[in-house]
Amino acid sequence: MLQRLRDAGFDVLTRNHADAILAHDFPAETAELVEALSEHRITLAEIVGRGGGEAAQTQRLRHTLSAAGWAKHGFSVRTVVDGIERESVSHEVDHVRAGAAGTLACEIEWNNKDPFFDRDLENFQRLHALSAISVGIVVTRGSSMQDAILDRTTAWMTAEGLASEADLDRLNIGVRTRAQREAVARAVARGLPFAEAFARIFVQSKYGPATTHWAKLEDRVSRGVGNPCPLLLIGLPGSLLTETAVAPPTSPAPDLFSR
Image 1 (cartoon, rainbow, N blue to C red):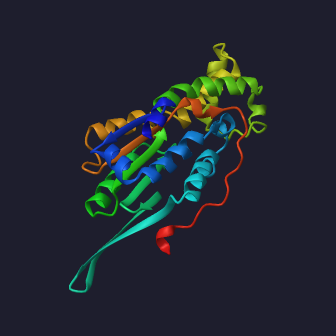
Image 2 (cartoon, rainbow, N blue to C red):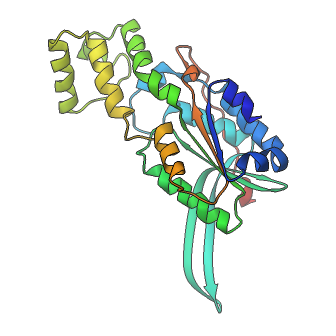
Image 3 (cartoon, helix red, strand yellow):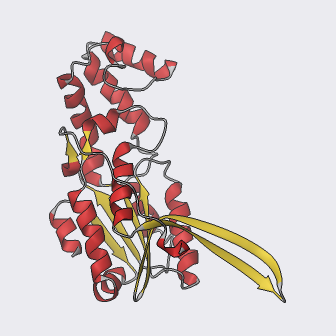
């Protein structure tokens, strides 16, 4: 099933026999995840849209997974000695899927600061050591998407007629810092078209190397972060980017563990 993602250009990496565990113990649950990711699309308008909350495309993917039973869940771990609670720790996970053979935990890191990968992988390590999860899964921007964002964003901004500061509100592009505005102005003064200059500064500041993307995740796993938890790592490819509008998400499913 994971081969379907690889064939579609996704980055896919497994560690500590996660592929065998998923294939033999979680075939239906893995198929749900593969289907949701294969059908997911991200519009260029969402890539450049102003912030203020979780990205619309991430919300849409979360709703799709939740509707399939991959609900948000908070794991509560309590240490009790002779009836006295000595420690209580909680681990909230974006998407948890319970199956007959165990439990899968999935985190989506679309565009956070890259230390969030350490948090996710270390949480998976602890939860696996407690037999609370069987496999930890991380979904992030893939290498081909990271490489494509600048060119695709530049092309979209040019096609949409971004020619000056006056066009930012029309295109739902958020307020920038003074330093960013000045950097764009300097690039335009050197002869770059406004859309190209703006796209360069925009992508560097919002989707730069210090954010969550495939290379940062792969580096951490290669250093053993998260071991010995079985891991499935998935990078979203550039082929998911589209100019076509996408339907808004439907209501998510409840946390099945809370029943």
